[in-house]
Length: 105
Image (cartoon, rainbow, N blue to C red; front, side, top):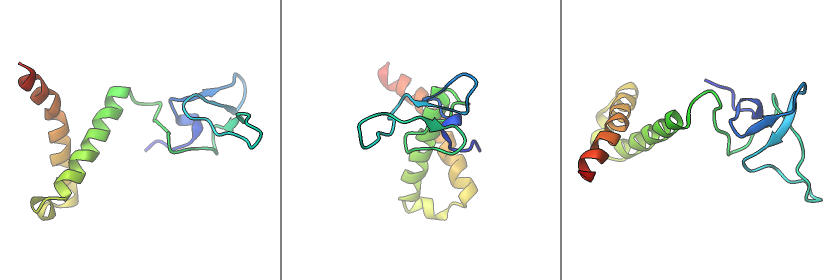
């Protein structure tokens, strides 16, 4: 799994030849209202987004998490092993675009 630091975030802009840069998503603010530099190997925030995957892959991961939570909240979800739960959630997330196309037709 990718380490959740600024240097691995799609929103972070590293300054050339440096290990620090600036957040382009939701940068921290100093008390005087300026935006500080962030260190690529140390800093991180709640807006982190993995730079090594595409936005579509990130969206699919989020959809899988949501399906897993929905399945866990059902009576049926309690009967699944942890691994099986995630497989069912992945299958559900993968089927979602097809379902959307069928509904729209």
